[in-house]
Each structure stands twice: as structure tokens, then as C-alpha cells.
Image (cartoon, rainbow, N blue to C red; front, side):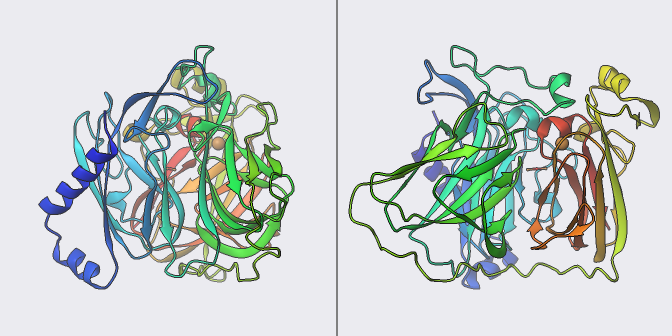
Length: 473
Ligand code: C2O
Ligand code: CU
């Protein structure tokens, strides 16, 4: 069994045995830190609260979620991945602006790791914020089996809060004996909402508890690591003040309900002003069928303070390159398909066909600009070709009856319009939720060269054809 001690030991060995290249040494001496981690995915059994027997998972370092990787902005990070699974894998740092070769996409940015193989990832944390990591190999299976973890990059000067907490929200599909139902990759799920679990997990356990003291101000980092489940979070008795989306600062604003699709994150601040002993539900308003996902529970004892803290909630920005809409080029992506809705025609490998034929023959159910792409290994042409430094507006049009959280690797974009209307916050994101039959316009500077994944983060949709690449030369 992989223990914390092994983890530290191997982290130590790695640091001692690997000489830093000159540029890394220079970065390290520029008063920024360097951090070393070791990750080993492997099959394990874990006990879930309220579930009889043990549940089979695949996990990083013996835990679901995997270890919380905490670093500071500017840190140079080395992560040694050792594949303890019986299948190939590779790990992606979701939202982190890494050099292309460190992006962890098998067959696109690196060779997948065979069982027992190792790979060293190394990059500099350019952005502070809330990120996460997960395999990009057969992610519709590897992620729901339990392979995901939080990656937190602290600001140089964080805002004042009493506590900084992380909720990694996911779900799991259990049979009556508490075993995971191993029905990953069904075409029925690819062409619909995706494969949904029947238990919601918060930090790997059913029923999340946010334990607070009266008067506390909490920064709660929410990460949706579910492979397909979209949440619309509501917290009874508390105002959620959003301070960041996908790790990037946004003008602080209260929301009553918070949509958070697979892959997406939100940092919220809660001023917990109720009395000791009180308790409030954290609910999902999108699909209520599984009940509350957690509770905010007030501990006994004296209040920390009687009035909410007055200090600023504005996070420092990361200085992302600002797209200039006047000189931006327009690119369009049309999304079609799915089992419900208008019948569509698309091409697979250059051959046209009806969507239900594509599903039967190829297991593909979605098209982007009329084509459905196979998984990484078989991918053909980039969907879009951009020049390095190009200012771009990407007009995404969703003609399907389904939600799609669309994710672009290696970049952040501003969400500038939804259904043709300017957005209020022009928020930066790496994953944007497109509603059914709606359109979203995003703007970015394509400044990170390489071939980058651009896909739906409902991982069954990605595997079902809603996956392509954007190449930047
Ligand atoms: Cu979170 Cu392409 O991935
Ligand atoms: Cu989708």
C-alpha cells in the first residue's frame, strides 16, 4: 500500500537525485520556491461512510481525491508520475498554463505511460488560483473511478479569511454491495447527459460537512470533478460571494445559485453569521434526486466576531493577456448531435452519415463543425488553426438540447457574450458552460504555442465526438 511516508520518501529521493537545469536553478534563486510531488495512480479499496463493504476505486497515492497539491504563484513544480495502474495513463493539470509538452494529453502532447512507467512533469505556476488534475487517457473511465485531485496555487498576497477550504465535488455509481458499477463507455451515456453516479461525494465521501464557527469568514474553493454531473449549488442561510471562476479573479458578487459544470471551479466567500449549533443544507438545484450534497454546521462556542469582516475580497489578477476585440479574428464552432433533438448529419473520417448511424458504427454522437472526432490516438486535423499572438473571438453555437462545459487547454478566455448579450463580468475562464440551444462568445489571445485540446468536459461527450484540437503556430 502506498503511504504518506513513501510519498515523502520518494519526493525526497527525486529532489536529491535530479540536478536542476540552469534555468530552473535561476528561477528557484529568484526567491520563488520549487516544489516536488510524486503521484502514483493505482487500484484500491476504500470505505465510504454509510455504504456497506468496501468500494473499488482507482486513486492517486491511495486516496480519493488524490493529494491536495498546494503551491505558490511563481513556484517551479516537478511532479513525478508513476503509473501503478494496469492500463496506460497520463495526467493533465486542468487550467494551468503549462508548456504544451507538459499538458498530459496522450498521443497529442506525450506518449501515454504504460503500466510501471514514469514521467516527470515540470512547469512554473504562472497563475494563482484553484485548479485540479486528472488523467486525460480514457478520462470517461479513469476520472469516475476516482482519479482526480485539487491543485491550489496561492496568491503572493491572499485575501484575509479565517480559513481556506476545498470541496472537490464528484459522484460515484454504486451497486447495492457498495461496488462501483463498471459500465463506463456506454454509447447510451455518450449520446445523452453522460454517465451519472448515484451518490454525490464531497472530498471523496458522501455528505460534505463544512464545519464553521460563528462569525468566521471562509474561502471555499469548489471544484467539480464529476465526469458528467452538473451542479447548481445553493447554500441555505448564506450568501455565496463569488471571487473567482476557474481560479481567475472576478469582481466579487453574490449569487443565490451557482452553476458549476464538470471541470469548472468557483472560489466563494462565506460570512458565517449564524449562532452556534445551527446547521444549513447545501443543495443541488439542478438535479434534486440525490438529496442534499452537504451541510454547513456551526460548532459550539463563542463567536469569532459579531459583524462580518470588512476587508476586501478582491483577488489580485494574474495579468492574463487582454484580447482586443477590435482587431480580433472571428472563428465559429457549431455543436450538434445527441440522442434527443433534431436529427443531424456529420462526417467521421471524411464520410458523411446520420447521427444514429455514427453512434452504431463508431460510438460517436456529437459533432463540432459537422465532424465527429475519435479519441486522441486517432485524431486527425485541428479544428482551428491560429497564429501565435492572434487575438481571437470564438463564437460557440450549441444547437443541441444539452449542456456542454467547453474547455480549452493552455489558455484562459474572457466570456464576452451569452446569447448575443454582453456579459456583466467578462469573466476569465478555461471552461465555459453552454446552455442547451444557446450561444457563447469568448475572447482570448492565442499566445501559447502548440496543439491544444478543446473539448466538452462531460467526459462521455468528449469521448463521443465532442473533442478537437486548436493548433497555435
Ligand atoms: Cu480537465 Cu481536457 O481536461
Ligand atoms: Cu457536452
